[in-house]
Image (cartoon, rainbow, N blue to C red; front, side, top):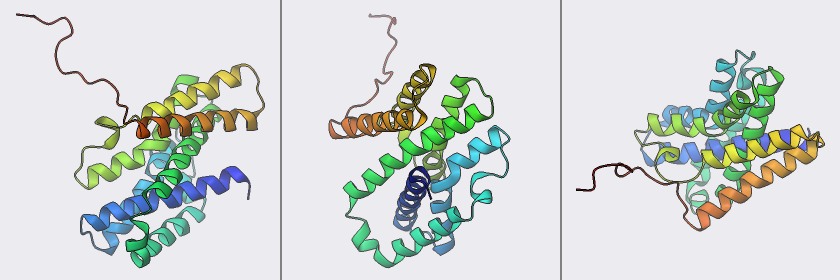
Length: 208
């Protein structure tokens, strides 16, 4: 098991726990909790694979994703009171997860000969759309649409990866630098509560 795959599994585990916690808070039954954990953890990668016609779809081709999600749900049920307060730890796993998911999705897009911009979008989809599906199913406005700089951090890291690729930088070095950039951006914007600007009125509207 290489380090990237191990981090991918760790990110899947963290995403599954975050989905399970949301579902439990919404008072879903066991089946509902499993479904929400599942879509949170692998929904983004599944959408990416469907869009680029990649087969087998991520979790179908690797049963370890299923076991990871089920393990995360089981641990959440058993230790919910212990896990819920660990927001900083979960944030760390979540942030590492989105950085790895972004770059793995980007790499997969490039491997399928997609235009770099489209591959970049596929990386972002891999990282954040599991959370979008989770929020829609639990009747919440998706986080990436209203508050935190989340998808933007993924896109920034992906751009850095593509720039380094253009200069033929070693693949491992590219991955480390780009993923570190995503983690750094995500950490800084959360710490300082930074947000993207919102459209509240016409910029060129009537001043009267």
